[in-house]
Length: 264
Image 1 (spheres, rainbow, N blue to C red):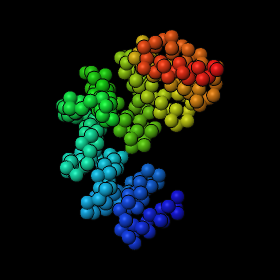
Image 2 (image 1 turned 45 degrees about the vertical axis):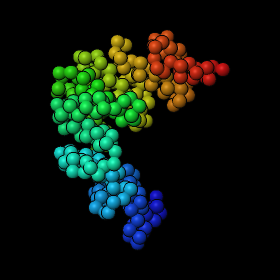
Image 3 (image 1 turned 90 degrees about the vertical axis):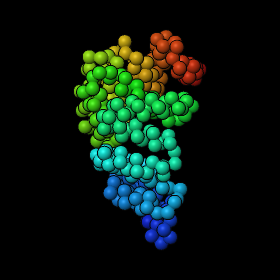
Image 4 (image 1 turned 60 degrees about the horizontal axis):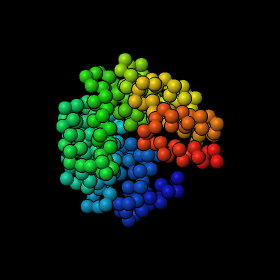
């Protein structure tokens, strides 16, 4: 790692190589967690003459602002560089993320409505925007819980996992079983990503059978036993249950093929 840093730094200083500067910024941001150092490098690219990494650096610079809690500044910076950011889809996706964190529900709904009307499901960013819209609809008039969920996701983006999980945990027993189901599923998924398999399985079992999220939770449970714990017998049982319980699932054929592979 240090060797890579030294090489990129040398190329940046001696030849003013933009690509090396970008890769060095990525290392500082994503691996070393040096937000200020990465921001300085991204800004040097942004302030350079037109280059292939300017648009990417703007987005990464905005991500760092979000990570540092400077959400309003992130919004203003995104608007400032609107005409420089190459992809309208990336702009729309980042704008939706920022407005979600700012709890600007009215503007967010308006922007998302326009985007979804202009684009089709084939667009890779369509589902990102649709997911945000669905989240708002899920909470309906419970603005307080929606704002709590928004804060939880923002904390997660900022790599403040403990704070994020604490907020999400407070929503796991929500009176709305769909909200509770979503919170339990996402809480379990985060626990799994942190390597706490037992906790993830425990939380999955808390998803209400009547919730729409029970399908995703059941599949996640099967895949944990299949791919992580290598408990084939248990995985097969859960896959069979899944096929019986959710015959119209979009995952039906994939699971059927997986079962055939496990039992042949």
